Image (tube, rainbow, N blue to C red):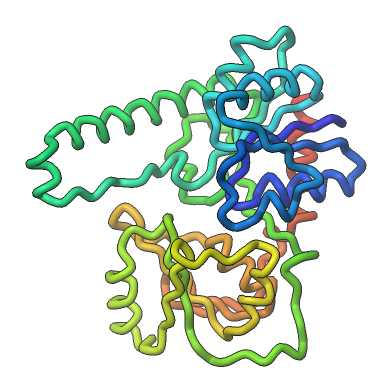
Length: 295
C-alpha cells in the first residue's frame, strides 16, 4: 500500500509511518520546513519530506494523487485542498490531535484589552472558524481518528476511532543499569498554560522537590530524549490547560514509561508501565485494520 501522511504532531505520524514500513508499505510524511525545534524530522529524515509552506498544499495534492490512502494530521486545509483539486476520489483519514479540537484559550491582561479591544473579537472568530473547519473535515473524511479520549466529546461522527498516542519503543527503551535520582520533574512547554498553578498543586499534594525544566528555552533533541529522561526517577504529568487538568497521559509521560521511569498522573496516582496500546507497532496494526475497512 502507498500511504501518505500529511503533517505530524509530536511524532505520531513518524512512529506510525515507521511501523507501517515494517508491515511492508511504502510510506511518506509531508511536513513544512522551518520548524523542527526538537529534531523529530531530522531523526526520521528517511521518511519525512520537508517543503516550504508556500508549496505545501500543492505538494500534498501531487503526492495524494499517487497514494492509495491519505492520512492527514490536524491540517484540515490540506483535506479541503485535495478534495477540491484532486482528479480522483482519494481515501482520506482525518486525524485530530489535542489543541485541534480543544483549542487554546488566550489569556489577555486587562491592559492588553484596553489597548487593543479587538483581541477578544479576533480570538472568538478564530475559535468559530476552527470549529466550523473541524466539522466540515469530519463530514468530508472517509474516517475520523482522534488521539486522546477527552477529544471524543468534540466530534460529531459516531464512527470516530481513538488511536492512542504511539511511542517508538525502539528508541525509547528500558534499561536495567541506569543511575537515576529520585527527583520529580516536569517540562514547561507550549501546551501548559499555568505552570504556577501546577507547582502549587503539587506542593499541596506533598511533592516539594519538583524540578521544572523549561523545554521552550532549552529544547532537548528527540534523539537525546531517552538519555535525558533516564537521569530522573519520576515524571510529573500534570497539565493545566484552558483552566482544566488534562486526564490523558502526555507524549512525554508515555516516553518516560517506555524508558522505565515512574509517572505521577493527573490524579496523583503513580503509573509504572507503558500501556500496551501505546506501543507503536500495536497502534500501527489498529490503523492498518481501519485502512483496510475503507479501501
